[in-house]
Image 1 (cartoon, rainbow, N blue to C red):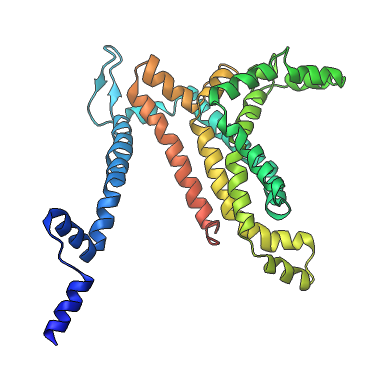
Image 2 (cartoon, helix red, strand yellow):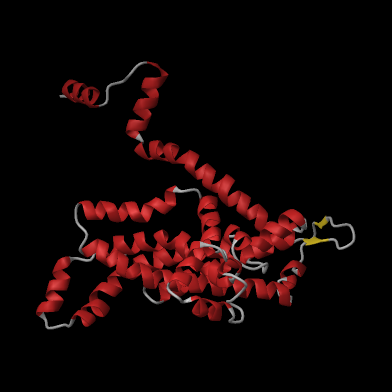
Length: 319
């Protein structure tokens, strides 16, 4: 019996010769070790390169800049965070948060009908065309898209020409004359910045919502109809709660990307700073790395609060 058992054991786990064979046998007997070694490069990248560099940057926010020499004073202080409460810095934060919230809300309102139509009614080649239309802007260069929109929104651009052909130039002029959101032209106004943000980040809102709606079982919709629910009741009681994780996921992308972007406000819009521009200016031109690091903490805290509120509202319960 012992000979049979030994033969069976060697047939299942044969002892290979050489160090490669021994290593293979070790991985066979300890699969968790094999999985750990496979994940080790990714964990090192995440822990050292990504999280480590982010931690090193955030650590700079607890230092201060010497006003006379311009050198960093490596002593723990909250002076840099106190500078964030200055009126000009508060204006930068509020301006960025309001723009990010407006872009996210508008993107959700526009993306949901598009995603619903694609998930429920698009089939075959029409679905392929949908994905092509959504993904096509992502394949183009980011700067090319932004500069193209600068030409479109310029005073001599195609959008102004369309308004002129439709005899709606007075409407556009009245809109641009409004305080805060207006300007000399769409390309140097908050309205233009909003439109470009909306265009660039829209795919990141549509795709998660479309994926969430596709996961809604059709039998739930049929059951709701059989129980006498109206289409509006079915939407609010069945579709919307199950699609909410997709909306939240899309809003996380859209809101966070708008919070940190500095290229679009640099090219489109007024000279007023957003958080991304403030970080770039303080870290590069001004050389005030502690204040730049303190500005980077603001989006992190805002996104943390947003995720906490979304979880409290049950946005992730359907996952």
